[in-house]
Image (tube, rainbow, N blue to C red; front, top):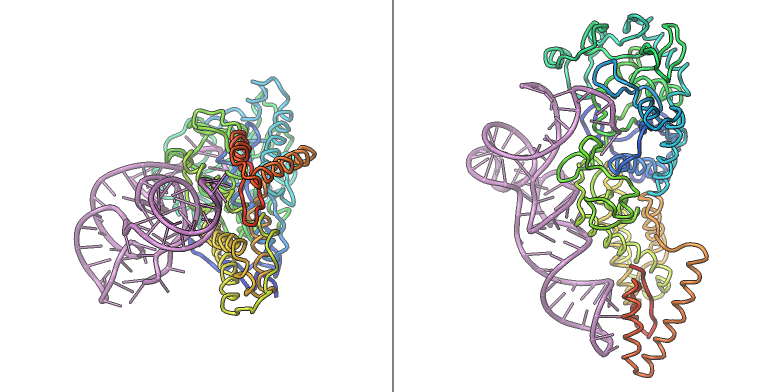
Length: 503
RNA sequence: GGCGCUGUGGCCGAGUGGCUAGGCAGAGCUCUGCAAAAGCUCGUACAGCGGUUCGAAUCCGCUCGGCGCCUCCA
């Protein structure tokens, strides 16, 4: 039996505002689209949180046995800087400032984005389409919307007719808005003379003279509107109807609302069945954002070279920190919280590393009750993950397994009564969840350096053993204390063995 | 102004009406030559005020905070 039948998944669907049983449109297969980054600057930690949230979704679906097609786009054109329609293209502006080709800007930050994803151990999507690579699809999409009567052309630009659309189907169902309210409340913007209505949004914009990123279209030279690429590319790669659409909470309106309207205006199909939104990372209670000046890059995080950071934190520490809260809750960044996460993460991983040192399970009189109880912990982990990807709850249970492992190591007799098959199954999932679902990995020195270090440590440990054996505590303590000074902790174990960990 | 979220012990954070996660910090104990690690035990928190209920952190109302979106934003 596949795991997804054993641990049926439920998800909070923001389209229906309810937690629902997850049922893919096609048995055993999942199509998921997630809004990716706009590549005109470095990603900051807040961006990382959203992508991490959906990395968990992707990983867990896969772990449950679903075959997942995960599409995450790269927005490399089209978003304007100003709040009116005449603003400059962000990428073009960056290109002008840095004296680069727009596509050089795009490439630079796309590379940077990939590096960051790798650093935090996020899996690459199945397809990573770019907006500039799908201009034709977007033009075709617009043409269909126009022919359906939901868009109009004005002087080389095309706008989506929200009011007309709203006569046939509700606009605002995802974000809980209604058109009448918005028409009376939306503030006046300048430079929107072309639009019939303030709520209308651009599907295609005529390129002003000097605009760098532009393409030919039936309406003249221009570029696609802000929301169109996701509609066009999700349809192309996942179909008119697919399972999951994800993105940051801040994209809910207007971006995702526009996406739904575009989809329905084009084909009558709304796209995704389940809409999932990741919440924001905050700093002192405020959203981390470039405009707030409270964002920092992953590099600053690692080095601690930022005024908000007391010191540097590793990528896995940060990943673990993010997983300790639920993706739909805001998460507040602080040095204290990071330090707590760091210790917790190390404790968890230490127990994972201890598993291989354990003696065999089930070597004594097997106690079925205790065995079942042990198994129950990992079942709870999977049940919690199936409850809307609740990593926070799951981690609590993982720590329980962790404690058991530590106890088994100290008291092998407790392990002797645990059924071997049950133990192996539990440990398989314990390791699987930590590495495959949560994406946590050991942060150790790699390569040749690691071998050398290991060899050096073996020598020092042997020296300390001899010193202890001859009751030369002054020397044995000096070895331990001096190593502690340079960040290596020696631990004496039962039976005279010693182990070490690197801080 | 509209839509929505939120207020949990020293800190961070889960919480499906009753059995009241977990991590970090703190206290005690065990183990230990001394440590460290680990294990065990402890703190009995849910912004305030009402209400529903046998029973509410959890549901309802009001009050007071905080935040997000409504303009590009993960």
